[in-house]
Image 1 (cartoon, rainbow, N blue to C red):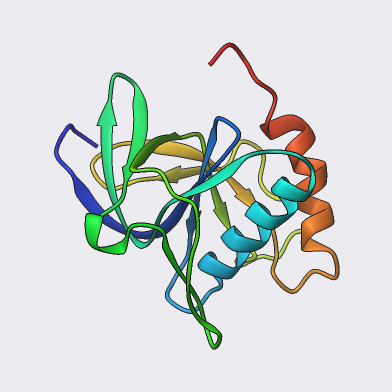
Image 2 (tube, rainbow, N blue to C red; image 1 turned 45 degrees about the vertical axis):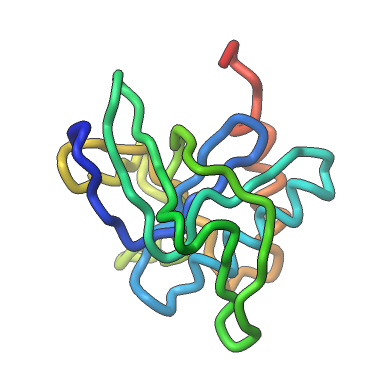
Length: 154
């Protein structure tokens, strides 16, 4: 991924100073999962903001994967079947993790170790799996949050 923008089908949010890129095919629940994670993070006292929903401009600069929103969708997030909502947003942010709600084809009990999402143009992010059909996806998020949202001198 170069300094040139690549339009990527995803939802990008920031929790604290950690950027999360929700990925998967259309209809897989990216926006809903992102919104749920934001809601749970705020309940836990963390600040959140949307970068972009559905269309995310991705660049790779200075060793960071950067997500940027198109101005036309500023602060808008679609909750399938419920409508489009307006929420707090930022114009761009560094992304640190990719999250998918899809189980791997083998459906293992544990996800592969050190799984990586290769982004168009050469960037990559560690990939985390939070199944949507789980009884407690937010509990899984809370457990992951203990490791994800530690401020590391950013």
